[in-house]
Length: 126
Image (cartoon, rainbow, N blue to C red):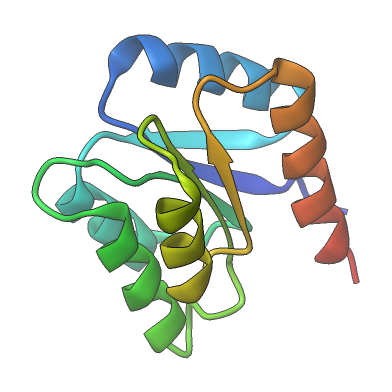
């Protein structure tokens, strides 16, 4: 079985470092980009198993990126976990409405994040 891959789209370096460490420690192959355009470029180059996608990004929002993933037949099977610092119920509903598989609000417990990633990638283990 090949190693699952995660694309982390997060513009804040400190958060990206922490998330990258956790994702790598959980045994997943990680690629990180910091902008909406870089996320689209990365998706065009390689199709990850999961995208951990910040809502607030330079150039394009995470909502835009998620919608583009869901509209592209080649990418539609990718799991999307959206994360945001400004997460109220409205943001969560919008994230799920544009096609996110899960939505988490920062700050979140490390155990909750890793459990969510494992759950999303386990569904894909066919």
